[in-house]
Image 1 (cartoon, rainbow, N blue to C red):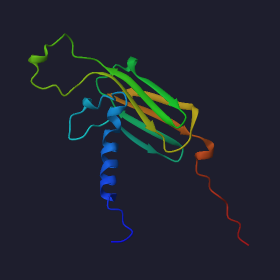
Image 2: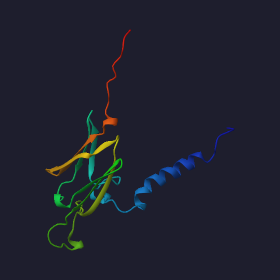
Image 3: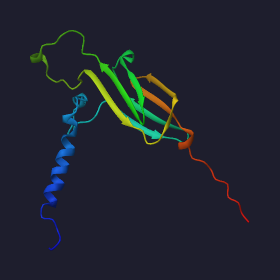
Image 4: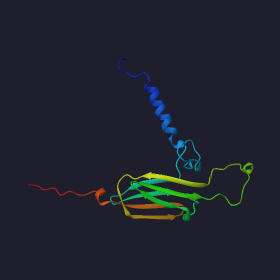
Length: 149
């Protein structure tokens, strides 16, 4: 076939592999907190919006609320904290399973729209961190009146 690049498939494969390994080059995000087929960021989140606000719910059971830090930076929300290790030191050879990892974590969440930085509230209950971000006036939908002649 004239005009096709014979290395296109290889280039697509290279890009996929690069994308797959992007997270490994940056500082650890504690993807090991959750076992599974693929590395996932911690904490797991739900991100959704209403007409007036953006809501982020982060699943973080066992995290000391005093260690949680929520920072709003431009159009991104940063969630940091620390999940404590089990009480007492347990020798590595004593473990049969260790799926509940511990340590510091950092998660950056890109927000879908502009928010008012002065109208942000965070609440931690039953292992779920809920962050409510009020949309900026410019980002809120406005109803336009239609003049009929």
